[in-house]
Amino acid sequence: MSEGPRPGDDDYEDLPSNVIALRGVSTKARYGAPVLVLSIFFLGLGLMFVDFRVGALVIAGAVVLALVLRIVLPTRQAGLLVVRTKAIDVTVLAILAVGLVILALIVPPPS
Image 1 (cartoon, rainbow, N blue to C red):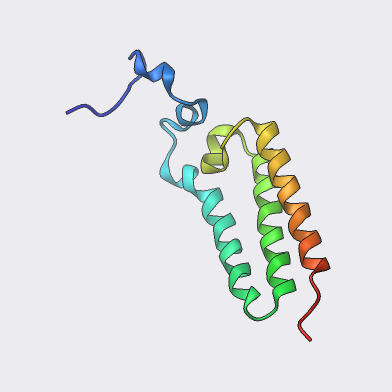
Image 2 (cartoon, rainbow, N blue to C red; image 1 turned 120 degrees about the vertical axis):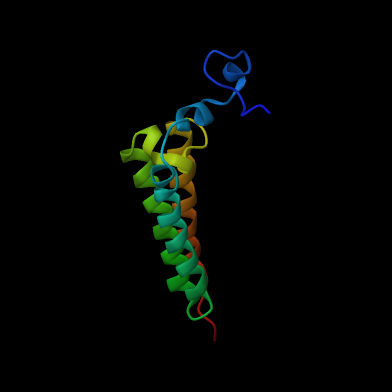
């Protein structure tokens, strides 16, 4: 039974660079940053049932945290926050964070 591509195999070169970058990285390093971000995200999701604006701002804070972690951490330590190149990841996260903050501030409170 094959364990998958290994360095030196022909198939190894066909893997995306983010998968190759995570090879040999410990589980804690791979999942640490995304688990922290998702924990804050789900906290914000729960808060949305109490106060939409606060929940949306907490979710925006989780996206900003993901943005900061993607900028600060090297690719091998950013783990599953790595989707594309760093520039694309940072751009998408920044647009999403700004959009969520604007959404939280524009939506009127319930009457």
